[in-house]
Image (cartoon, rainbow, N blue to C red; front, side, top):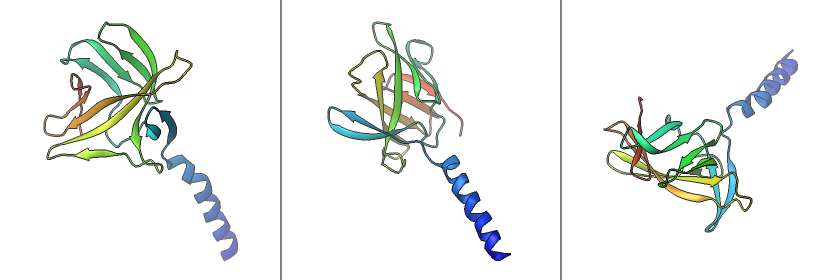
Length: 141
């Protein structure tokens, strides 16, 4: 009886573990290898607008795709992720009431796959998230 219960428990653990695992991807950028994820325990997906209500914008989708609108208003379809350690733990610098992350993105249409870094910050007191310091979205804890 105990043997079958242990086997059942082991089977459940083996199948349940991948369900809760953090998705991590290894990318190559000019500075070398980096790891990225789309989950940092904050609601980072959504639309980031210039000054809150105008273009250019950035759209981050939960599946790691999105749209990055450049200053000249041309849009690129992109893959994106936040820099993390190999185990999926996000890399960031924490300040008094903010945290700074590294957002990596690449143009899906380019075959060379160059990843580009963009500054991403969360301002806890203001309840705002910023990409490149000017495109923002509000969030709720």
